[in-house]
Length: 185
Image (cartoon, rainbow, N blue to C red):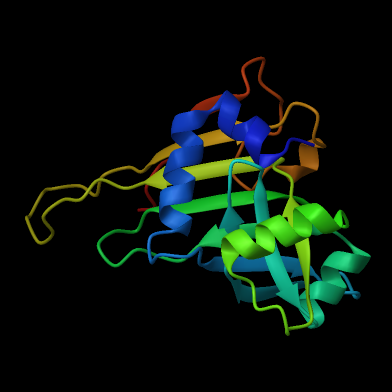
């Protein structure tokens, strides 16, 4: 499983595009999907923290924290921008950070409230995806909708099941690729 730093070193432009969407409103903002005890999905708004050390999230005592403690699988999706339908997606596994010095350093960097019962989790990256949609003038007869440009990075060491729907399951020799998407009719 790749750390955010490993992913960013391998695909800096893709990592930067994802970071921009996750931090478009200042501090990080996105939707975290976790796996409930019954196997179903649970979605929560969160404030992810991206540093040179990795991708992190301070999680208070909540169902999402219990989900991550029990089954670390996650998916993180950006909040939609106001001016486009661009989106960012990252999935992998979350691990609780237990090194007190590292927790203290990241808590200070992210200004995490010390009196709150939170735990720090680091998110590894099995899949990273960035979708950009061209902006076009709507309402012009005969102008077809533009197809989105999708960039996907797959960790070659992650299980094949980590890829999102619509992404080919075969692992490429290169770790990233563009995926041609077709617009729904």
